[in-house]
Structure formats: C-alpha cells, structure tokens
Length: 452
Image (cartoon, rainbow, N blue to C red):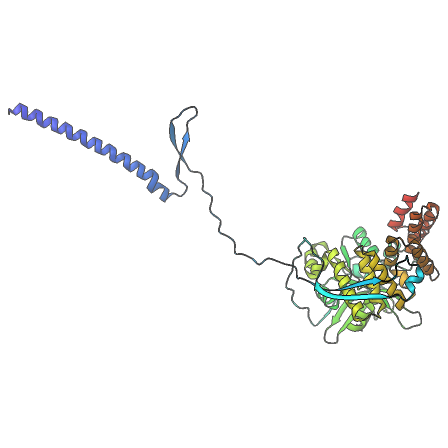
C-alpha cells in the first residue's frame, strides 16, 4: 500500500474513533442527567421532584420540575384516657298510693297506705353533655373565709341580708335595704326564694350565681376551701318560743377536727360576734328540711373551677335526679321522717313525675310538718295542679292563708286554679294580690297579662 493510502486509512480511522467517542459521551451524559434527576437530587433535596404534565391541546408530554413543599407527616399524639362520668348507684323508692279516687286535702293529711319498693342499680340518669372530672386535693382540716361584711338583718330580712353579705366578699358595696327593695318590696313578705336571689345577682351585679339541691358537707368544705361564697337555706328553731321557720345562712368556715360548720347568722349574730357554729350532724338535720338547697355566688372567670367542684351536679337535670335518689334512700331508711318525704315530692316535681310527688307529699303531711312549711316551699301546689287536683290546691292555699297573708305565691297558685277553671275575674284578683305584695314577681306579671 502506498503512503497516501496509509494516510487516508489512518485519517478514516481517526474520524471513526472521534465519532464513536462522541456517541459514547452523549449517551453517558444522558445517563448522568437521568441519574441526577431521579436518583441523586431527590435524595439531597426532599422537596425536589419531577412531575409529568400534559400540554394543552397536545398528546405530547413535557417534564416540569417543581419545588412544592411536601407536608410533614404528623406523628400520632400520646393517647390520653377517655374522661368518663362516674356511674352512680341509686336507691330507687317507688311510692304507690292505694287511693284510686281523686284525693282532697283530707286525703293529703290523712294516713294513706304507702308501699315502698327498694331496689339498687345504676342511676336512671344519663347525659350526652360531658362534665370534666378532676382529681381534687382534699380540703384542709380547717378553713375560714375572711372579707365578708356582716349584716344584722332587719325585720323578715334574712334573704336580702345574706345576699348582701355574700356579694360583699367580691367588693359589692350595697346594703341589705338595696337587695330587699327588689327581693321583697313589702317588708312583711315572708319568703324570698333561691331563684329570686339568683335573678338579683344576674340582673344587678357583674357576678354569677347558681342554685342547686342535694348538697352535702364534703361539697360545702370543697367550695369554702376554694373561696366560693355559699348561702344555704335551712329549717331553724331558735328555741325562743317563736317556733320553726326557714332561714338563710352564709357559710364562712368549717373545722374537721371538731366536726363543726360556722355560719354568719343574720338573726342571732351581732356585729361584735356575727358567727354561729353547729355540729355537722345538727347542721345537716336543719339543712335537710329544705332539700339541702345551696346558692353559690362567683365571678364568671371562675366558672370552670366551679364546674370541676360540682362535677355531675353542675348539670341541673342530673342534680335533680341525684336529689331524688337521696330522698328515696332517706325515706326508705327512716319512713317516719316527714322532711325526707317532702324532699322526695319536691325532687319528683322538679322532673315532672307529679303523681309520685303527690303520694310523697301526702305521706309528709300525714307525718306532720311545721305549719310554716308552705310559707317557703311550693312544690305541693305545682304537683296537685299538674294532676288536676284543683280543689286540693285551693284548700291548701286557704289553709296557708289562715297562718299568714304575706306569701305572694299563695295567691299566685289560687289564681292558676281560677284561670284553669275559666274564672278570669277571680284569677285577675289573685294575681293582683300577689303583685301587691311583690311587684317584681315575674310569673304573676305574666299571668295577669294572660288573663287581662
């Protein structure tokens, strides 16, 4: 082969080699690109990814590089135990009167045949509203509230005086005359109900208040130790010849070692010595006569604390059912206790079980109640009214009027009977008599408008 032929051949080989190396380099470059796109970069950058999107109006696809943040996966929270309300064990007392005819007042006060059936089991109450259950530290052995201004009550003024004392703890600067002007404009008015006191707090102060029944000593201790104002309504016999009557007291302390409760007593107390101390047992006996009613006054920002302290009793419907269970148990344990039976009637009335309530009231009247009982508590009227025992309502009201003319609720319930009977003129007269005693009596105002 000639030199020229060798040179040409060598040149062709060089060109071929170059082309081959270029092809290899191109392929290697593509492979490196894909390796970077799909392998190395996603590992280095967690938010780097390639998405395939369709071009509008074309069947071809293009690659779009995005840097949209990938949401961080949330780890599950540590599971917490489910809060459950405690299952209450109730004592059920079924009261069945043997009378089959419509009773008169004599039936209520006569000795009836009553069958008591006691069974134990889970409480009938249930609720879909959950109440926070907290493990509360036990209250100290002794505790005393300070900062309450004492008011020695004026004539018939224990309700307004005690309300003024309770409000004073929170800086309220009014007087018992101020509370009385709304609660009982007529000084002879024999009764101020717990609901009237609640309404006053809600309407005339920046504070809040609740009224519940079925309290106990342990609850009182917790409330006082946590600096809540508690006013209770109790039966009271000062042993001075006046006899039994209803009375409000403001609780200021307790002593577990001596088992005593101390109250500010607006009647027996004096500015130099405002307090009265009674044993737990005596206090509870007096308190039972009013179904262990208690009022709590508090600032709004402490409501959650109060809910934890009251637990199940914060829900009013549960509280009423709990009161029924307590009264049933006490009536079964001591069938001769008229207050246990009266409390059972009151609690049954509060949940609309009127026939059973009438039977319980009948038993309480038969056992003997203080004659002033109907000055302060009016559930018997409601139970009789709701079971169409209209003549019994009138008889009981007239019997009460023979002991006092100064209880506006007596006239109100007479008016209700006349209204149901269609005697609107007589109803108007009774409602007006109620309003003459207390122009702020809202139910009587509504009733008078209804028949006018």
